[in-house]
Length: 254
Image (spheres, rainbow, N blue to C red):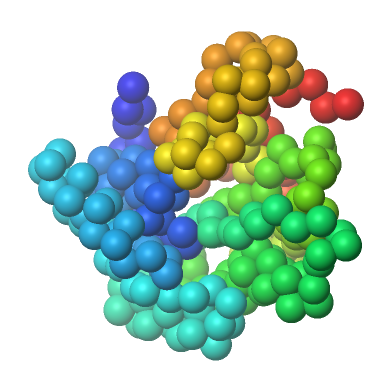
């Protein structure tokens, strides 16, 4: 299923973390719509895999920049370079994040700082750097949080904290930037069957948990989340800003 959004044709979008998982699927979805996509990721091998996949579909590759988002100056430079190149930025997908499992006893200050640098600070300063380039007609920003903000699983305390900060950042920026016709929303996925999740975490026991917890007992695929991103970037969602959209098949938040 590939919904069509004619307004994406010739629009320019920035996306972080596009070399795998949800970002990989979102890049493909945007390019299918005729958009130009500029990807920042620190995984060039994944970016090459994405380019080869798109080539097999007779689709162009995105514009890729190898970038560690913990380096905020480099992240801002990337946005400025893209903005000067294209002249107009129509939207941003702040998707990149890191989620190491660390107990409180083993948590180090540098672990805490790194997660906030990548999962929150980069989002804020990428948006800030794009301000001079956002389209006059308006723009849309999608910040990724997570169902884990609501479920609070063990060993993810710092990660969950960053996702709470993303929700707060979205609400504040939606108010501050609304007068410029810039919409800012949060997308919080449930447990998504990315390649990494399937390899490292999703066993039969986890699948049973997912089936019990979701209203609809079907595993969620990355391309399904990509479609929600398309909706939030599209003109169809023009009335939506400052919101958290939960794409989790109705996970029971207890």
